Length: 362
Image 1 (tube, rainbow, N blue to C red):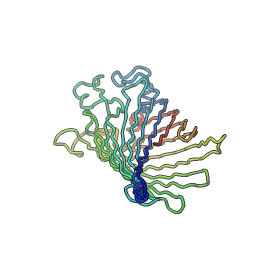
Image 2: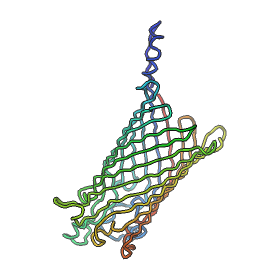
Image 3: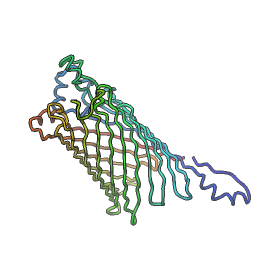
Image 4: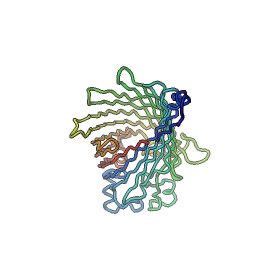
């Protein structure tokens, strides 16, 4: 929607520049996707087998280990000008994931952001996002095991809510080399059974976007992430004095992506996106192995790939087919704990999907 002021005569000419400053462009991006996920809780082969054999009564609160996800998102934005000819943009987006069979996994999050251009080629953005409830899976609560023993009742849900505050600045150098620097601060709040996992996370990132040839673009990124977990759940305790898990860690992450604009077919544009990410996560628990089997000496290798084929059906409508692959390999310096830790934390996950996107400007 564009707001214009109707004036007459010399007043209209005198107010012409002022009128342009008050023009607001509204935009809505709508997305709908159907996704097949073959391992919704990121289980290792051990627990997938136990689920199929109806073992571990109380652990599994799902009907199937795979599922179909219905994804919907809406991104609403308004572009206007506060400073002369420099664009300002405010946006709100909402993303929702609904699982057809296993509703326990349903989740959503929302983001509010403001972007301001400081030159025609440079801009900054601040944003806040909120995720109210994300279910991971059920685990045994060791505090309950001390009371009830190894019974089904000692399996309790493990989940969290999340506040995320972010900032980035980007600039285009030379002709078309774009560099983006980002900082995120996140706070995780775990449910009542696992408050020792509450954490404060800082993420520092740099990304480079560079066209290689006319129809091929490259993206290279690096991030450094620190997570400081609470590490205790009782009054009077500290992280070092408690016998609770300490999930604090540091992570180095690397990203490589390409976008290849394919030759048009009957004036229809289409392209391929490919992306690879690798993260190495080092846990810093100072507890003895017997007190913190999940984190003492642990190192994670996290790997993911994404391939997307996009077709621009018209200026507003896009169809995408995609495939995502996720993989985690965990090892530990405590060799005697390797088999246990791999069974608890290793996983492979595949996702296949179709998405339709519609862009509306008014």
